[in-house]
Each structure stands twice: as C-alpha cells, then as structure tokens.
Image (tube, rainbow, N blue to C red; front, side):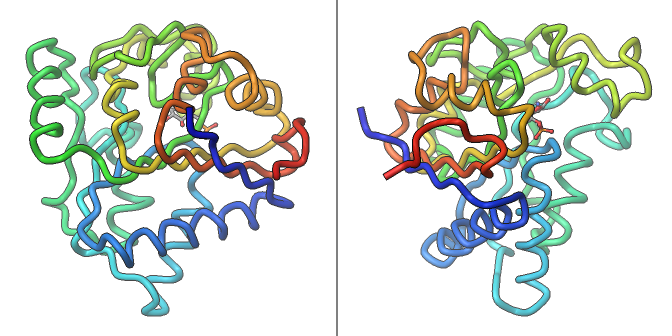
Length: 245
Ligand code: GLP
C-alpha cells in the first residue's frame, strides 16, 4: 500500500497556498487535466489563490475539464444553493474555464444514468486529479459512512451529521435535502492524483482516523489511502498525529 504524502501547514492561508502550488504544478504538466472539484468551505482559499495567480498571468486553466463531485438530489442547476452553482462561482468562472467544459453529476440519481456516467468517465481515461475535502463523519463527496471502495456514482441518503453540517447553507436543518448524488469512491480511487484538504479543530479527530486509523467503510476517507498518489494537506489545528516524515 503506498503511503500518503502528508503536509502539516501552519494555518489555513499557508494550506491554501500549498494546495494552489500543487494544483499549479499539476496544470503545467497536464494542461487538459480532468479535475474533480469539491465544494465546501475548505478548498475555497485554495481556489481563491488559484484565481489570483490566474489574474497575475501565472496560471492557465482554459483546457481543464471540471467534474462536479456531488449534488443535492433533484435540485435545479440555477438554484443558488446547488453545489454546481458553487463550483462554477468559486472555480470554473474565476479560472476562465469555458462553461461547456463542466460535467455535472447525474442529479436525478437514476442507477442506469449513474452507471453510464461512470462508464463514460472510464472510457475517457478517468480523472487526473480529485480535489477533495472531508466531512466530520469521514465522508468524501457524499460517500457517507458506510461506503466501500467499490462504491459507484449513485444516489445516497444523507446522514444526520451531514444534514446538520449543511444546515447553515439552507437557513434551517429542516430545509436541507435528504438525498444527494455523489461520484463513488471507486471512480475517485482511480484518479491519478488525489488532493485531500482539511482545516480546523472540528476535523482533527476524523483526520487522524482517516489517515492513521484502520481503513474501514465507517470512515470512507480512509479508503483514499489505496490511491497510488494521495496528498494530504492539513493545517496544524486539524492535525494530532506525529510530525510526518
Ligand atoms: C460536504 C460536501 C463535501 C465536502 C465536505 C466538507 O457536505 N459534500 O464535498 O468536502 O462536506 O465540507 P467543508 O470543507 O465545508 O468542511
């Protein structure tokens, strides 16, 4: 089993710049990269940093194809709370990626549509890079616990923890959709490189379990360690393990 490369950065800003460094290097060697883009709070600093670099003419991303990681089931793409809208506003538009280079997840969650989506990605050669966050319950995208490493792209029931942690975006916990569609762990694990970012004390416990604990369906992010090239960027507040070598 390859070991993940773990970098512990002083704080969120340093983490965001380190993440942007990694993505910039990746884009120089693979300008037409197929990139899975997480939303959530954690990668926003990284995306802002990438946008600044593009503004300064240091980064070119027009050939990138963006794959949406996850979405609330049945939500309209123009709903301001849709994760697709969030990915467009935070990543696609600031990086000057043409709108037709964005691939949404099949939000109707129909099993055959999801299977066809996975087959198409596979035929196109899979993802090159997946930029991922981690939920406090160990989820990746909306691969909620328990999720096994062969999990396909699919419709899922959100766990109470995920409903709770997304309540702020919906005004009230009652309004959070109960179901979502997510790229499966299987597809993510075939990504050439995975970048996992985590920040803050609320992620401390789950990061240790995902990175240092047993690989288990109960912590879906722990399965990312089966990836051939997993890079983990955490800030000091989110890290409770030994100083990585
Ligand atoms: C969500 C999303 C994930 C995200 C995770 C962590 O609910 N489905 O894609 O990575 O939670 O979010 P945050 O970075 O805001 O903690």
